[in-house]
Length: 457
Image (cartoon, rainbow, N blue to C red; front, side, top):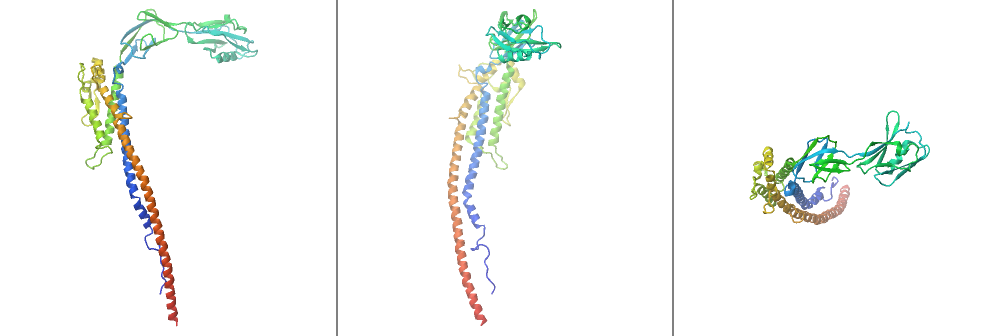
């Protein structure tokens, strides 16, 4: 009789059976993980939508109050002589400037100069005052040069800069006050003891003086060439003196271009929000696929409210405009985007700037909200970080994710216990069958031996 052998696992069961049984235990974890991914995707979509709502709100906060429309543009008829910039909300009007005299720094030059900046100077002290301040002194020892003297003066940091000018033959020591104005005088004092560098040895090459000009018949002066407070909301920079009889006209107007930019920013932010809403709420009728926020009642409410707020006329203002369409801002029926007719908007601003402004900010005294005020009020309620609709949705989804994390943790513990139990039971079965197999093989071998003995007789 041939020998009997048992190959593979003692039980004869498939070798991957344990892995498959353990894998079956993992199924609830997989389902929970899939649910968590859905909620995480939903949370990301809500946060994305909230960010776009906040962007729209920020754009509208430049259009929702009366003060937002104090936009001014200022121009100069001769910007090479007088420059003007808006620093606030100046009154619209014309300003005439004449008799411009520029402020100057004091400057003194050593009259004789020296043959070389590296030649040694006589030992001594160089002393001076600036702007009537404390006397300053620097000392040089025998052998030190003009360059050393300059370095020591500049190291004082008192508002006077020392330099060297070379005319091709000699080097000249030059002192220049850092500040303009008649009060900022450099005085070389009697305590100067360096031979050849005393007060009489210097020439004035620029005289300190205040700036002055005539503005609408009033004479104005100051130490600087910049005048920031003389006309409320304007900063005037004197750049070049004017000749006798020359005038420069400053014109201040409402800045329709800046307002147009703000309106464009509002439209861009609204259209970006519209695109985001479409991305997160789309449905494909052919495939039946839908994005994560499709059918969400809160999101649908936001879409409806925004359209309603922008399509409802602003009644009671008494001006020429009560709808956005009258400004050239209309809704594309296919995409839902806002579109601007730039020519129509420019014409509206030119015809009635204040009327356009009121359409956005309304009339607070009459209790009328314009489009900007409406949107900001609504978006405040939606995006409030404590009580807003979007915060409520965010908190709810985060709560669901935390609950799923708890379920995953508890399920993982149960799966680990069940998996270990399967492995232990399978190991015990293998051990038992292996033991029985060993005993059965021994008994069978004894019978075979007995049979062989009987046959041999």
